[in-house]
Length: 540
Ligand code: ADP
Ligand code: MG
Image 1: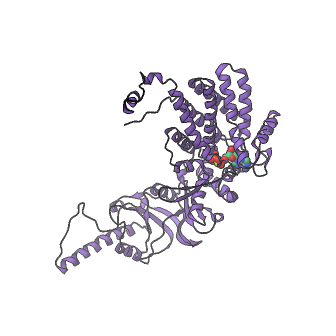
Image 2: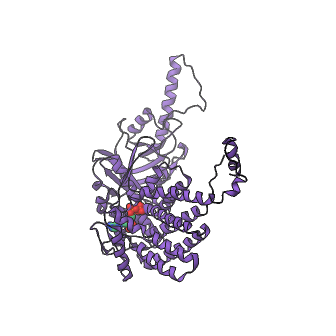
Image 3: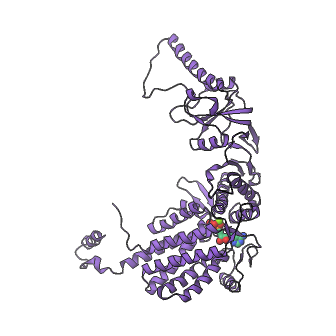
């Protein structure tokens, strides 16, 4: 930066006034940089503020490929926004971090960070040093998390009622909210199917698969026993589409004639030679298929291949003749899931195609429902802990957003497995934090006290925004909330649907403790990072 600053006067010509020792004279430059960072980051927060809560708005995003995405999820909106300013990009990353850590609360975390930045801006203008602000906010965040833990309600994973309520709260602020009574039980059951409540402290959401099919409505979404595949059975060669007592094999090699490694040509100028080549090819493929049959396999899943065709019509013909159901185009990423779900092992070459690598199921069937065909595998022996959800919707936009909403709800249940406690929603915990931090501010001294007070006011942005977004008067709502909380009514929050204030516990608006604590921790961390930056340099 020093180089750039000293070069600047020379470039502006001899008439420009030259300052001596320019870099050292720019004492207010760090402040300028900080303020501009804050402005940029706040712009991002303001952009998605209107999406918070059940009455929040959705955004329509046009991607670079001219595709349209409609979403209410903070992380999704920010991911698609083209944000240039480096400080603003930090908020995008913040939302992504919350998505990874908790999965829900991705809008709240950014809104909270925006509000903390406004608070920091005011403190900076009062002349408090940025390091002191960073430190003060850190202590305040630690206290805030303690307060949240204090007011949280411990739960048990057997308590299905609370799990359903949390999933419903998460779904209630989505485009597909009217279907939350259908989706919430699916989400809860899917997670409960794959966890062992006694020992597990985390859930691998890769073990839950969502298959999206256009057709029908979201109401038709279901959690299926066993496994469903994205792919269809190949029936072009007359192969079976229904197999009872299935033995499932998953191959990673190709059922097509081998290709030379390099491009080379064979010139055939004799019909007899031509026949020989065709015969060789036929024998080669027949041999492969016979070996597969010999191992007892009658449902063959074939991994997608980029080198050459995974199957050709001749091998499909042989497979059909030997009554083997063929399903091709299995993606590389699906292999692990399919193996876990069906108990089969992937087979990399024909010589290792043995019976012990097959998976067993009572029935593999391609069925048609709601205008699309799906292959369903049921009655699996040795099935691992996986769950499959078939999701239906009228069009791709609805399906995609429903998928993201279900993901958020799954994350909510995962949070509850990780940390088994709930807090109420509707802005109640934020008001509680705000009040208790204000009290703590009174017993602190110096900059700490000011920072605590500023932090306390900043977290009120969540109830304020919830009220704003539902068309209520933020000032009167928040004042009343403060009064009721001061009287000891800890779970009173904004009843967004009725437009009043009521007990959120009775309204069944609950969310995982982890979502709220992680939002506070991550947003404070980002704000502290932004406070400590005093210059922006471009790298070569
Ligand atoms: P995020 O991406 O941060 O999860 P949401 O749009 O899901 O954003 O909004 C979450 C906020 O809405 C939380 O503060 C939550 O307490 C609140 N909320 C959700 N459902 C309700 C409800 N039925 N009544 C009041 N507040 C609600
Ligand atoms: Mg949410």
